[in-house]
Length: 111
Image 1 (cartoon, rainbow, N blue to C red):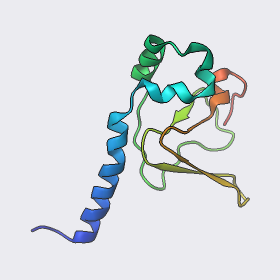
Image 2 (image 1 turned 120 degrees about the vertical axis):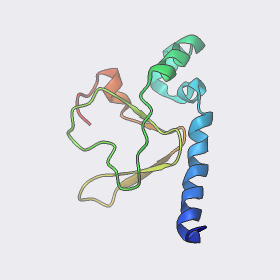
Image 3 (image 1 turned 90 degrees about the vertical axis):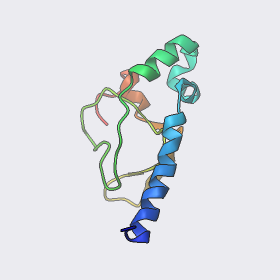
Image 4 (image 1 turned 45 degrees about the vertical axis):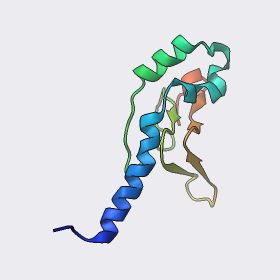
């Protein structure tokens, strides 16, 4: 009745990583250069509150090249691997990291 131990341990590891997301608040936005000129707590708190918080599973795509976008991604928990297609270039992002800052600044219309 207890179930296999390996899947349970993996699930517990995932749950532990997601606990960081529960503790995240507006302060995580203070380190993003796009918000340097507006480090006012009420503004950042409202921005964080209004943001869409999404859960992605391993293997899911957060964004694809040349996709139209007007949003930015901030990692609240876990890890994300960004890859450049057909190259060996990749970046691993973790809690507090961000990407697609140019999309919210209006500099680029696509990812």
